[in-house]
Length: 365
Ligand code: ADP
Ligand code: MG
Image (cartoon, rainbow, N blue to C red; front, side):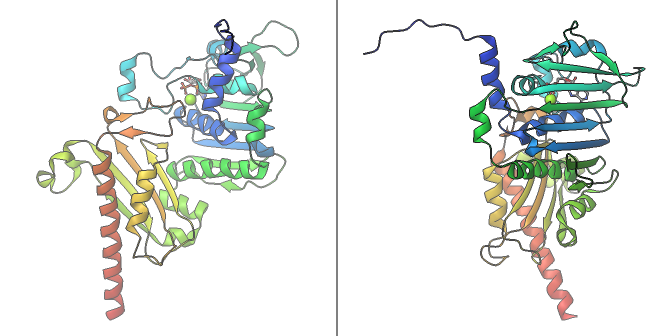
């Protein structure tokens, strides 16, 4: 039997590094947080540069509202946010962020620096952080340094996981980490067709991904996933009850306010792997239940083992979504999950049947 040992509180730096590891599991999860911050800031252009799968450098440049110089000292502290100020605010959340943990976490597991300029600023300001704290690199008192820069914010995370070797060795090759990054950026580019996105490897002249601003979801799918998919897309919408033509005939459960915007490929298109883009209240999430349900719709429609491309954007009353589940906010839970999933599957099914019937009709005439 072991001797009981004294119970001691861990040092803050250890606690924070552990917590950071839960939010930032790999370069693509850091990138997702940074992307969401840029979108929250109202950016219309987001440029990403990646070195060594994001392990050496993850840089994201936006043209959003910028960060006020006076906020820079607290920027990377845990639980500092401009997005909510009370618990009640969570119920009407309109932004991606709210925990104020992303930049803090990144600063605990990488070398974080920020260059930012608001419209009101005459020059840009640069700040560097370590473990949540503003630092100076040359021994002078820690303060933001003036520098040249455009309106907006550039965030650089270098040497990700340099101080958590276990996490670093759990990562895959840099090419696989890069493809995960590209996957996240591509999905956000489809969901935000009015924002121009680019993503490239440092030193490479041409980006792997580049989308124009002011396009449509369909155009964005064509540019990113290819014209074959774009040409096969069916657009299915489930409107809010009051927008529906026969609102009075809606079921009782329809009183819950939600709507869906769906693009799915018709029976002419088939791929070896399902591509599913799922956004709930504009946040990229994963849901095994939705994945299985929409996959099931195509069984019997596509040859065995073949899969479609599906983009689903669900908008659910923020009151009905619990975003406060996990720091990564990937696993979103919401009321009436079953009913909503059923209705989405039915809508896709009906569209596919309609499409099939009209095709048969075309052949006959
Ligand atoms: P959260 O997004 O949960 O508020 P973060 O740690 O991601 O927490 O960011 C902290 C704060 O820093 C944000 O609330 C926002 O005010 C500011 N911020 C972060 N990134 C940007 C950006 N790209 N442009 C403007 N402000 C930003
Ligand atoms: Mg954030």
